[in-house]
Image 1 (cartoon, rainbow, N blue to C red):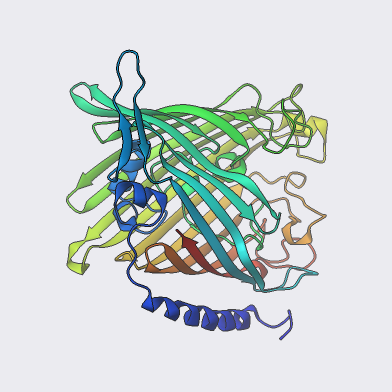
Image 2 (cartoon, one colour):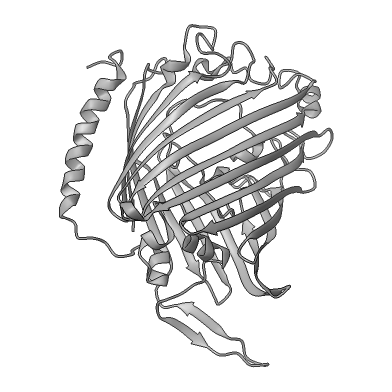
Length: 459
């Protein structure tokens, strides 16, 4: 078999391997809660997740309350006017995640071998649980096999408390985090939205909004939030660039985004539960002024605003299966004056906009199986300078049109609650501006269609 053979032959071979691998797990006893949150609360994973990372109402409440709900033994000491109190877990809140994967594109990326095994694709350590009565964390450090080093991943450290406002319950708190939307409670926003898994070797569209992952793990923020009467959620965070691994104070020379002042992020949402139906609708956004490769001088201005929704329907007649619908629309408006003036090959001087639509439907067969179909569409202002990438033919954009669109189908199986075996297919109708010959040297959008297989272990 050589790299020019159809990618589905690779998929067939690997699917058989995965199927045999999965069968071995049928003898594994049904697992209790093993990650650190489960050890802390005494709840099985299914109590807080329909399937990870999708949160149930209890899961959202657990996060809202700062990851501090504890159902297992703690070491405690009362406080007085002169003595500090204490509440720490008897079990250290540490978890581990290991991911192995295979991915293959319909056509090989030029000059490379198609059919990529990664064992591991990545591995993570989590410090996840209560630190004290009102402080808890979700802190992730991840090893990436392609870079061959550990890096700081998703981080959300919280203080949470509760009171009454207008005779209704108010849960409020403070968050320290490193990625816009990572603190969010829903699976309709970028950080925890679909797709839940992704190949690290397959091409992806170049055009993306800053709030849609472009700043992830490259910023540090502090913010506050509140949930009133279990309906109205308000949150706000201010961010600064942090550039982990670079000298501090920030020199900015090697980075596309260097936030000037602070970049505010805002979030408002309303949630409602009626019998077996749950619905959330909301809005979120961010404004940033940034100097590319500098910390003084000219500034780019970028504003993202978005709307989102999530609907979950529990179906008692089918044993509590859950049907979910989620979606978001992101509008980005930008003026890239600094990028153009400092380097005319970086962007055209005109104002830009970018529209991103993402939607998906999922059916959960209990908590052992799920099937999801998603759709995405990106449109915006053409810019032959901004989106060009002539040094990388696979990711080049010959027309300067940012449009990309396609679909994602995912099937996942949890033989036990802390092991995820998944198959995912990504199909592109348009990639970096065109369906055919998008890079000017004959590569079509469909050449980047990707088969992706994943085995994830969390313990």
